Amino acid sequence: VTSAPPIPVSDAVDALNRVFGYPEFRGQQRDIVEHVIGGGDALVLMPTGGGKSLCYQIPALVRPGTGVVISPLIALMQDQVEALRTLGVRAGFLNSTQDFEERRLVEAEFAGGELDLLYVAPEGLGTPGVQRLLDRGKISLFAIDEAHCVSQWGHDFRPDYLTLSMLHERWPDVPRIALTATATTATRDEIARRLRLTEARHFTASFDRPNIQYRIVAKNDPKKQLLELLRTEHPGDAGIVYCLSRASVEKHAEYLSAHGIPALPYHAGLDARTRATNQARFLREDGLVMVATIAFGMGIDKPDVRFVAHLDLPKSVEGYYQETGRAGRDGLPSTAWLAYGLQDVVQLRKMIDSSEGDAAFRRNAAAHLDAMLALCETVSCRRAQLLAYFDQEAPAASCDNCDTCLTPPESWDGTVPAQKLLSTVLRLQRERNQKFGAGQSIDILLGKRTEKVIQFRHDELTVFGIGTDLREAEWRGVVRQLLAGGYLAVEGEYGTLVLTDRSASALRGEVTLMMRREVAVQRSRSSTRSP
Ligand code: ADP
Ligand code: ZN
Image (cartoon, rainbow, N blue to C red):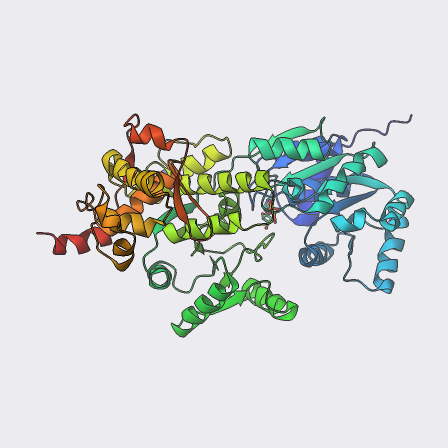
């Protein structure tokens, strides 16, 4: 066994200055780089924009051999390689878009030791051809980017990532560095286990993004609310608007354009050419708004995205964090704005219930949704709640840069209304063996003799009309908050309300349920109505 002399950290600093033109490392980059150039394995958790790439690019430059980077997005791979080449780094990639000639050239360069970095798609690594090729050259390290894609419970699961556990078996002496911007303790452990990174040192950066202002509002008239936000706070700014469906993307992109805001659509239903053109325009031109499904964004490095707006509820806190994290990578003040309503919950539940996954998959998806709801309905600091989700502590109890800190929501004791609503659901279930959506329960509480109420003789229930002290919007708020707290659940195609294990404690009055007051707009409207 020959041991090469250790590589001094000054080589790394030198590469940072000379190749990338940066004066110094940021945050934990220096420690990570030092660990990896010393041959250690690493698991790096760093928020989007934190500077993960340098953590493997620099070691790849200073260690002998080629750094092999596994990256899930083909389009991105090409951009990264081009950017590196402009800096004079010898980089190449192998993926399915290349023709035979291009491929052969890159393979020859790798085998001849002429590459500092080689990017490969995860599906490529599973093939004997690529494995044999890698045996022909010298590998300085493996970097596994977007490592959370190995998590079966995550929102970006890619089966090909599971095969990456063989890297360690086949090339036991090559250090590995796995990187992700999304990781709860559970996901982190799963990554370490599935990638056989048992000896890896963990580097966890703070997930706080202090320059992002988090705001979550009740959805009333989403188009108008969005337009208002863009006109008053972000005129001329670049931003991303996320929608759940392709149809919604098209509709909102047209709406914004028609109202003088330059907007482009992006979703998987558009042809590859349109997608590529729209993405390129968004990156290069100033002040464009990308209206997109979550198909857009992974790895998009546009520093001056001033806002990320969600018109639909994200499926998980991880998703929300990752999507909002695309705002303000340059560190300047930015807005993360989300409008959500009860209908979002019903719709997402419906998607979960009708999905092809098994029971465990659905339970997991439901738990993710519940955590997202809890974030929406919290009366305390959004940032603190977000960081707590990632098992991190907030720098301060109040961040002064989220809606709940800036304008603390009024809270009120909603225990009694909650009991009224839960008893309505209980009575429908027990006395009538029926399940209905939120609308029907609310109509019953408000004592509305609608066609459907009469048809089902719900006006004969003892709970009929016992909820006239609240307005409909307030009742919807009560339902949302009961859903967020797990005291109530929605299921099935029609979003019917059902009781949960926790319902009983609320019905018996064992818990006090403090609730967010509905937004001011609605309150002032009602105050003109009530004497
Ligand atoms: P991530 O992959 O974690 O989202 P990137 O690696 O793309 O982040 O880095 C985000 C941005 O920060 C890039 O524009 C990058 O060039 C810049 N950056 C990273 N490290 C440094 C540094 N040490 N000094 C200055 N800029 C840096
Ligand atoms: Zn706050």
